[in-house]
Image 1 (spheres, rainbow, N blue to C red):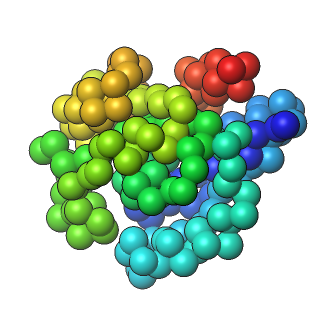
Image 2 (spheres, rainbow, N blue to C red; image 1 turned 45 degrees about the vertical axis):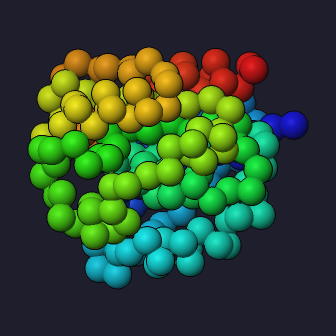
Image 3 (cartoon, rainbow, N blue to C red; image 1 turned 90 degrees about the vertical axis):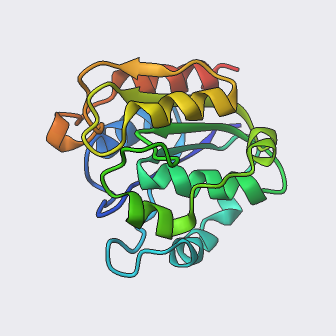
Length: 187
């Protein structure tokens, strides 16, 4: 069975930015089906509005699904994992804020869905986890990646000088993320 792979963008994001098109191409070569939903942002950005968009994609979520959340997309992924009825294959987080200050847009991220998470439910709803963070992210401090990895019981994948893993930081490709996905696809 091939995997369905989702990529969730962050605040102000869109489906064709950063490393998303590159990763889509690489994973389609591996017969994965890729979904990159366009969520309302920044206008109309709320957990409720994002859940409405995601409702159209629920039918593609199964035990072979891999979901990658970038920035605020990682918070959204955490919220989905809290309520999934059966586990997905993997959840991977890149530059995700979970409430450890400093976070440049702390108030906006917090108002999106808060920073209190049901870690036991989250851990039960994915077989594998990955956490990528940089030591010079200008938006989300390294403490977020460290704490997220600790809560999920995984080793942090620290990428030096990667900024926020976005085009501004030069991230139009993300080979370390592809390597992680390749490992997971083989399991």
